[in-house]
Image (cartoon, rainbow, N blue to C red; front, side, top):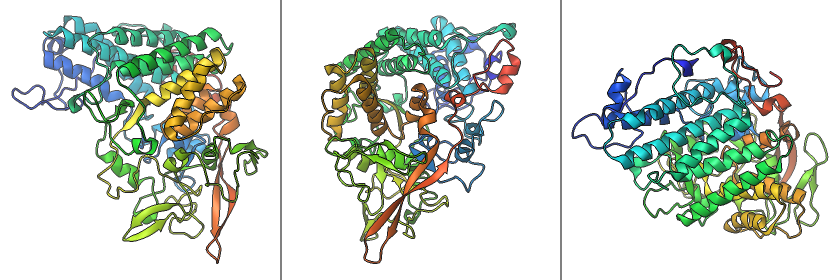
Length: 582
C-alpha cells in the first residue's frame, strides 16, 4: 500500500530554499531531491514546504474527470456527450455499471486529480499530515504564531482527507501517527463511520479553537490554504453525512441534532466574520475569488487553486456548443435537472413521473407550467445554469445568436460528442459575454456559505421539524435567487422534499448531488434513466418538443451507494472487510 511506505520523497519549493528569491504562492512546489526528516524540521522554510506537500493530494474539482467531464455527468443531473461513442470514457463505463473492486472507471487516465486514485491519494494526504504533526513541535520555527497556524492547517487537512475517504468507501482505520516499518498490517481493522466522523470533528474543533488559524486568506500568496472557515464547513458536512440515512440506519435524532448545532454554529461564526451570500447568483460563478481583508466575494469558503488559467479554457472547450468552437458538448444538463426547478411563482412545476422512463411528467396544475412552453417563468437559477433551445445567447460575429439545439440546428441535439444529447448545454461558470478561453472563473469552489444554510435547514428539519429557523435558512437562499419564500404549513416530509430540491437547484455541478443521493439512499429511485427534450423547428419558425430517453444506467443498485475497496488493498489486509455487494 502506498500509504504504508516507510519513507517518502519530500517535494520542496526550490524558490523558498533560495536566498533572496521572491516568495511564490504556497502551492508553487518543485522537486528538490531526497532529504531526511531531521533536515526538514531543522529549517523553517523546509518545514513550511513540507506542509505544502500535504496539499498536493487535494482533488482539483470541476472539469477534470476524464475526458474533462464533471462529476455531475455521473449523476441524474447530467449526461456526458462522451457516451455512447467514446467507450473508454469513464462516464460511458459508469453508465454500463463497470465499477468493480479491480476496475474503477474513475481511475482511467493519467491526471492525478479528482477521483483518480483517490483511495491512495487520500491515504497519502493523511500520511503526510500525520508526519508533519508528529514533528512540528520540534521544528525549528521561531515564530510561534506561524507554528500554530501550520498545525491548524494540518489538522484540517487530515480531517478533510478522512472525510473524502469515508464518504466514498465507508469507515476506515483511524491512523493519527506515522506508522513504523515493522507495523503488522495483517490485523488492521476498519473502524465505524461514526468513529471516523468523531475523529474528523475532533480535529476540526481543534482547528476552530486555534487562535493562529485565520478566518480567511487575505493575500493571493496564501490562496488555497485551509482556514478556520474551512474547518467549520468540513465539520458541518461531515456531521450531516453521519446523520443521513446511509450511515444512520436507526434514524438517531441525536445525530441530526448534533449536525444541526454544528451548522448553526458555523453560520453564526462565519457571518460574524463577514461571510455573506454574494448578491447575484449567476454572476457569482463568473468571478474568481479575491483575497483581501474585505473581499468582493464573501461567500466562498474554499476554492481549489490547481490548474489556474487552464480552468476557464477547459470550461469553454469541453462543455459548450460546437458552433462556438468547443471540442465537445460535455456534461449536458438532463431533463430531470430542468424539471427540478420551480416556477417563478414558487410553485413546483413537476411533481414526479408516472412512467419508469420518466417521459410522462406529473405536472402541478397550480403552477402554471406548460410542457409545450417549459422554460417560461422558471426559477432564475434555471436561466443561470442551463442553455436551452431558442434562448438568446448574445451577439456573435456582429449578429444576435439564439441557441439552436433543435434537431438540425447549429448546436442541434445528436448522439455525437460535439452535440448535446439532452437538448441542453451548461451555462453555469461561463459568462456569455466572455468569448476567449483565457478569461473567466479560474477556480472550483468546494465550500460556500449557501451550502451551510442548506446543511442547517436539512438537519434541523430532521431533528425538530419545519421550524421558523428551517424556513429562514431556506428562504435566505431563495431570496438571493429572486424566488418567493417557501409556502407555510409544510409538514416535515414536505419540507424534506423541498430541501432536497433546493440543494439540487442551488448546487448543481458543484459535486454535491453525487453524494447527496447516496447518503439519502435514493440512488435506485433517481439514477436509472436520463431524459432530454428534442425540439423540431417547424416551417413557420415555431418549435414543437418531445421528451426523449437519452440513456439508461446500470449503476443504481444499493452496492453503488459506497465504492468497493480496491482489491489490491483488500488482499494486503486480511482483517479488512469488503463493502456490501462487492
